[in-house]
Image 1 (spheres, helix red, strand yellow):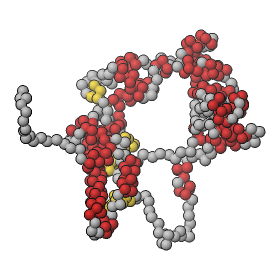
Image 2: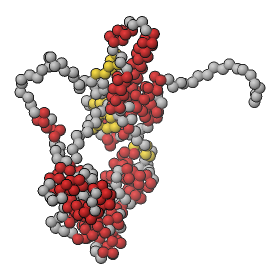
Image 3: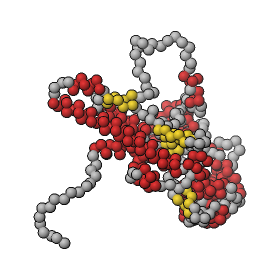
Image 4: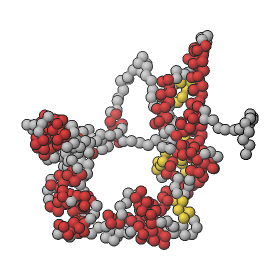
Length: 437
């Protein structure tokens, strides 16, 4: 090893993260909403940038005066948007039932502490301090609220909410009431054998109580939420006409970026060094953003095209034909880094013949089979779900039994731990909690 001191000249190549490259990477991972917010903020700080939205039109009051024509009610035009829309809040619904009560002022104040699900999330002592009354008065007021409709409102816990609904039923079920009031945790964890001995009842009686409780509403106040329906606007559209695929990127929902050329020329004519430097910086900023948007669209198109080429059977036949695919494979195919693919599919959606899906959903792990062919984890999950849906609920399959059946019928080579993981991802409980008596 040469440890002598000296001066040497050496040429090296390295990639430097420039502002333009950093901005292009950032814009690529933005969703449509995030990108819109970014462009709007840039338009505020850069006077040379103007954004135009296709769904917003300016109005000149001298020309665009309202004409005397037949006007169709907006609610009639958008009638489908009004389906299931609630016009009464939970607070209004409850207040209308106590408006003639002698303690209406205190009840009205207490109603403010009921959350959107119908629960009271504060202790009686805290409520007494907030309202400036005694704890006994709070308990009396809560009792009044708990007798209102919808049944279960004003509860402090899930068990109490279910109990309030049970005691207001026309036909009472003492066992169900006792289970949710005195043994709720043990009952919810399905430790029914010990409960049957403790309460001296049969397992079938507990099962009947469980079926009754399943019909109750754990969030009685949720029906009064007034929220507009949320729609996913796809970033990419894929159409299959039976012979060819048509892929298009939706960018109409994004603001259109334009350069204020007249504004730039007007101030560029002013002989001022600092002003000209400022204009050059803002012009360069616009150019960077414009190029980054083009690169973003180009990358999303390339990634989408590669996905369609690898998943042709999915787009032709349906979700059951989704093949295992990784981001690394797509990155190698379009000659970019794997992280670029990850950013390109982040919070992006594709409209397919089988619904609008997140681009990330096309990337699944590979599962081996006994016939040396690979399948996707989604197909394994679908098989597990179909198997559990068709099982005998009195003798549900254990994870080990599911593993053996999948290997015998479908040839999937997976471990019991993988079966448990996929079952949890599907929201399916274990066999002990699926069992019916």
